[in-house]
Image 1 (cartoon, each protein chain N blue to C red):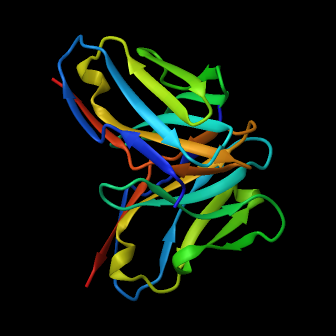
Image 2 (cartoon, rainbow over the protein chains, first blue to last red):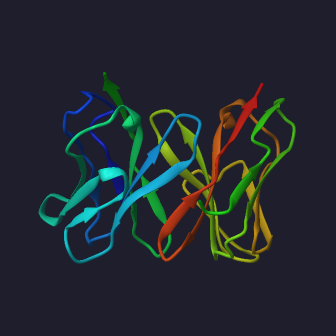
Amino acid sequence: AQSVTQPDIHITVSEGASLELRCNYSYGATPYLFWYVQSPGQGLQLLLKYFSGDTLVQGIKGFEAEFKRSQSSFNLRKPSVHWSDAAEYFCAVAIYGQNFVFGPGTRLSVLP
Amino acid sequence: DAGITQSPRHKVTETGTPVTLRCHQTENHRYMYWYRQDPGHGLRLIHYSYGVKDTDKGEVSDGYSVSRSKTEDFLLTLESATSSQTSVYFCAISESREQYFGPGTRLTVT
């Protein structure tokens, strides 16, 4: 069965530092790929998506992600983290039509 | 923000009682989903709908049923709530493979 892994349960970075959150999926074909962010007590907000084409995609709030087919990865990056980026981040894939599978999430803490 | 509302936002209920959660959309999207969110599990799909009266099971459907009699409403029912169903429930809608989420319902079963 298809699955999504996010190896880091919790990451702490200092404000202004760069960030990379890892995501790997297991599926034979290239799925549709997404990153969502969830602030405490809120629903999930779409940060960015990859369907096809350029493997480096830009999203909202200064985030970007790179799809690497050879590694089955879709890692999220930000060059300089802000305190407001503290949240939980979920990677997701859509494989069969409109069915989505989510990773377990990575909680990001930001030190002042 | 996508027009998705969930009601109630918070509910405490006793084991064995029936519970219905409502998701309402104003976007006229075809697909609607119910997920539960638990620590360490991310979001797990309970049921989804691909049109009025068209629904299918997800990964964790046992103990849950759904109904969709109108495009805009998707109901999730716990026929007899159990403590293991204490969770945060999210509704989502989708069109063209982009999902948008509601604010969530926190359900506590005592």
